[in-house]
Length: 348
Image 1 (cartoon, rainbow, N blue to C red):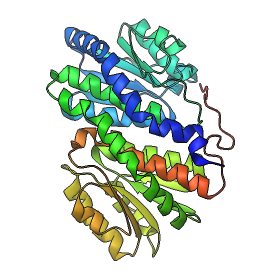
Image 2 (spheres, rainbow, N blue to C red):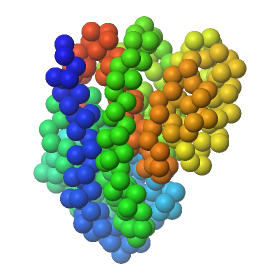
Image 3 (tube, helix red, strand yellow):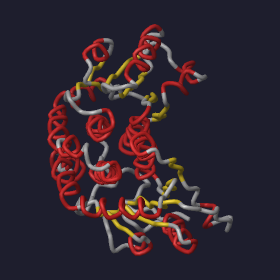
């Protein structure tokens, strides 16, 4: 199989254009939603999502919390669809995130929120979907049809939409940094040839972990998911803090530990963790723009410099996408059609 002819290869490389479209076309929508949040004096956010979109929700927990001082919780959709015991939303923004907008359980959360009178919004690639129709406000992902089963361009589009909303709520002073992200993602895509070489080293990888904290806690989860989906490898995500509380016992000589460690306030917390992994002779794969962090890695993957920490998840996931795709290709797997999976999963 020619890797460049696959849907996932094209969709990963479409991300700079998709992000540029989201930023250009959804700024007004983000500002309208932000104005309504302020008008209602919304004091917390509940997000309903599954799979990749749930990882975008983890990013929203940190970004809307740190930049906008909003408490963000993740909904438990089965309370609405199985237990028939929906919690009270109070003065919340209830946000549904779904590429397809078709999952009945996510729609059910927003439907109940509207019934209770809460403000509702949706981030979806299909604004006219069931989820879009259930929401007061809709922000589109503008990704075009995503043909590969594993989501790539719609994930970063979801992150961009969350970032747009955060900037709109904060008054827009960080918009310049957000506008530079498509170019920085394009720069990161230049890692493809290096990662194709790296994939050969990990052809027989059976298990490992991804590590991220803060904004990139979401990246650890999404990177692990992509490796599971496309390569059928047992990869578990952790924060470095949680990993030290027991799972550290997994690390033996050669055990792969992928650390997402871009510059920012969390990096000093991750450096001692990486030193601990080295002491235990673990196989460190480090994704960072920091020379010192890269220098301790068995496999360093350099990110572009100058990306603010709050935006780094849009860039730092790209090496993980490329690694999953290339590792699948190295193993003669079809990265477009992982076994047992469908593009749209409808759960309740």
